[in-house]
Image 1 (cartoon, rainbow, N blue to C red):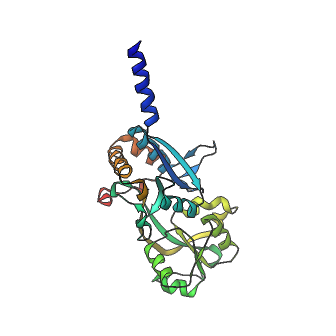
Image 2: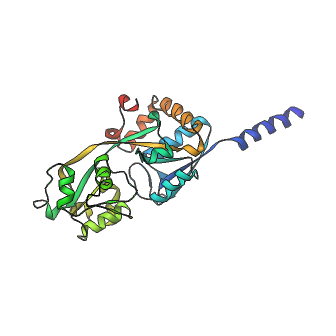
Image 3: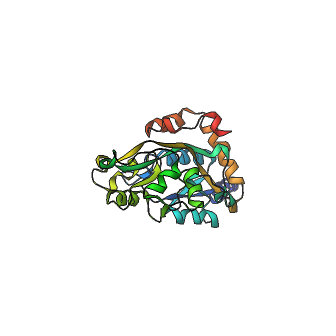
Length: 263
């Protein structure tokens, strides 16, 4: 009887002390990485990888989905332990910890225009010439690419709008802008914003910008322990068949980092 009570207490204590990892995510359709399926289940490549890694650590996981600027602020304040789909920047590194082994995928960015203007709006680098000639916008809080962020810091006429990527596509369709900047999969993620949007909008030929690593970034206020433990478990998970299976299920093989990207 005494042994049974001790065993119950030990198991109960482990449950109470189990780590709960609170993950911030943008409340948007970031398919195929983070989105709500028709069944109502939160899924996507990032989501399923995080579930698998936390399970291997014996952690619980809680996903908090809010507008992007709010999520980033919560990471800065330590209200969430980590945020997924986060690009690295000098400003963010003040409050976010980016470990090489916590790299989730490699993203690229491009310029989007209306198909009806494809013969009129052409891309001739550099980007600074393009944004000077055309009305171009990006959503606030998104790190599209280093070149675009440098232009904003140097007061080039690249407008930042406090809207989602889907809302920015709607502005493009309604001729509020000549072009917008977004991730190379942004059109896929935002196509529900406008009926038949893929027939109206297209990437601008020749305007594909360098790869941008996307991480699960941990709050510095949470300390580095969680970040390092997650990184070790995630590295081990990448060696397992389940990692490749998840990538194939969500068709993100082309976005997977190579071993050199984790250095």
